Image 1 (spheres, rainbow, N blue to C red):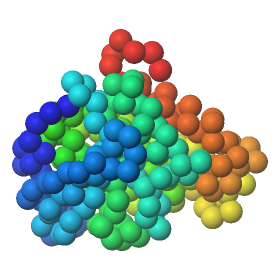
Image 2 (image 1 turned 180 degrees about the vertical axis):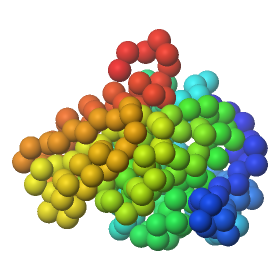
Image 3 (image 1 turned 90 degrees about the vertical axis):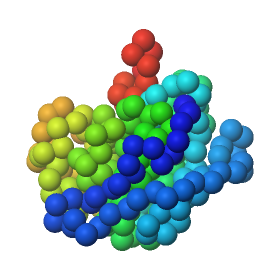
Image 4 (image 1 turned 120 degrees about the vertical axis):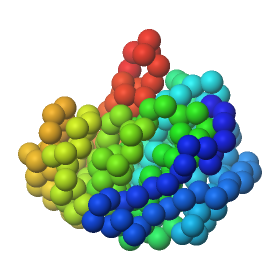
Amino acid sequence: MTGDPTNGGPHAPSGDEDEHLTLSIQGARAREGEAQGEMLVELNTTRGVMTLHLHPCEGKTGCVVFLSGAGGGTKGPANEVFVSLARDLVAEGVTSVRVQYREAGEFEECVLDALGACSFLKGIGGQKAVLVGHSFGGAVAVRAAALAPLVEGVVAMSSQRYGTQEVDELGKPLLLIHGTEDEVLDQEASKDIYRRASEPKQLVLLEDTGHGLTESAERVRDLVRAFVLEHAGDADETP
């Protein structure tokens, strides 16, 4: 995956009701990250510097964007599933970015971060993407996916309701994952999102599993991996 990260007009509106909220990428710089094969990318934007943990896959056009909860971070639930998938999906032809929010917990700002990540990926050759979010990040993923043409599908894990008001207009494949013993956001949140969402959609409830999905970490990993490969992997690959 190669190209100019500021190519294609990286302008990220957050929606008609918030037209004043925009984020434009003005420049990018990268250095080696801590993990093998990882690049730490800093994007200079009109709303401050945002950071992406990038695992690039040269010559491929599929990608995935990982979005954490309101507390920020980039490692994800289910035994740091964002980290393990980011590393392993490269071998299966998918570029990934883990988004480090500029203002964790600020919904519209985090939506702009997700859209900025999509603009960056498009600028370096991305043609299709899946957004994967946990908790607060699940709603961020749903909202951003409705605004980003690059996005082909959404995974929302242990998602909150707020921010998913227009999920019925998403029109893209949606996978909802929730633990039946979620102590932070009850499973009814994902059930409600599922009821309001348009097809295609799937709801997976994991028994005896809490908000962090640790108890079903392997199952979560398998579900997310299969979904990403189906919607952002090479057509000839089997999830």
